[in-house]
Image (cartoon, rainbow over all chains, first blue to last red; front, top):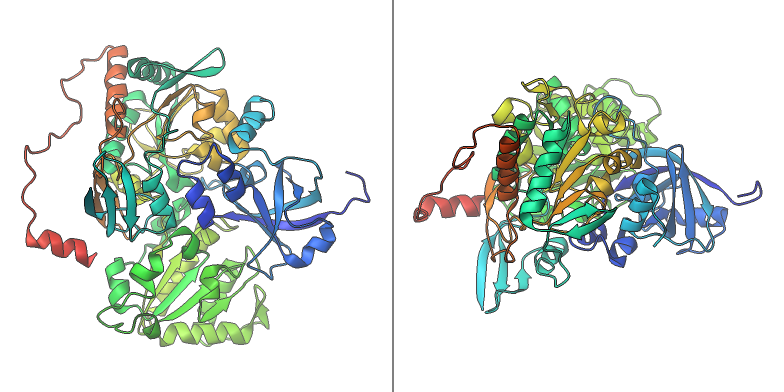
Length: 139
Length: 463
């Protein structure tokens, strides 16, 4: 990334979607799970800031990690400044693990920066977890 | 072809008990009725041809198939050799397996934790502080004319909640269903749930606590600033009046409050808000529980040792201190040296630093499916699916216990969760040099189930 690359700074929340609910029952090792949870919803007004087409790969980075997902126009806008990734291994690469001594990690309200990631592939769930925990190779 | 009726859906805390499942002559599930898309998918994919049916054990860095006895023995060795094992998950299995799990956790001096820790654990902490006024979903069907969803999205997460219990269902005092009810949604995005609402409030993210306090001020008719959490004063006052004007109100809340800054304090204030409203009307509050038996996991833990989750047995007696004894914090601080994960998938749903700890220690994964957790485990034991291939008790989100049904037999050689836990426990006792009783913690069912009474039927339909 260079200083002239487009960057979107946003507040990330994570949560359920019905497609993610379907995909977690027997599809976690398949492309269906990637399609259901490996994306970020961005407010339609902010795609110009990011200078990418909907469906393109973007890199989401926080103080806690980084992940490549697809950028999708949010159907639930307007909510400028807020982005959403369905709960799952992609979101959990960047969420804040601090529980504030409650046991509950901070799954909502994480400051992230999003940049275009042309040519980068959204990894499958198993490949992503193996890569980030065991240093496995990209599948 | 046969049809199994009154099947209980083993997916979310709504625990729909009106599912019909068609099973063909080859004992294949071929269709369902009444289930939502998620429930239908769970039944229809249960017998997928690529389902993994054999235990696996990690050898030379790879998971390879092994016998059930080998997997059980390895799992027991892992637990016995650990100083402080973590036994986590339990929310997608029945209470009978959870009960066996409590005995195992105590036997190995581990920490017993369920998925409440990353869903409604903060709600439980708030209930310890301020109590709770709640009810069953039957009360909502028959009485609620003001339905407030705060930080939850049932259209996506509990797809039949609105049609079975809260909004569209016709009840004794709500004869016209939705027409007799006002739906209010508070969310940072205009979700599908919000798009259907009569009143939608969109606060700034992470400022729910302030907004709820502002509502409590508005109930008293005291002055408010121009706006709170991005919501204009006039809208807050109008919402406060709507809540007070209802005959019977219910606040359903979800992860939008428990996972957001403030966490248990958000729930404190939500419960206090409903308590305040009882000066003007009847108002109650209920957590939207996620896994179909996460409420059961809390109950079993409570009745076995007095604490609902995050119970540490390492000193030989139960200790409870979420933030210290919770699985998330144990993993973050690397204070556990082995793990048994059952009926959940922390590999997919815990922050990645915690998953790295899980991947670095010996870990047993007990799950019918291949998941990110099973693929970083030392041992994977696939089991029968509760509610489809095994019957047992589950607790609905309103803490009503419901018996899930067995629709088909599990695949040959595949054990139930309870059988696996009990077999591991027996092997643990052998390795510990303890006398293994003939039957451990097993309640032998009667030879024949009693004939259902008319009361059983009434209970089923009424809930």
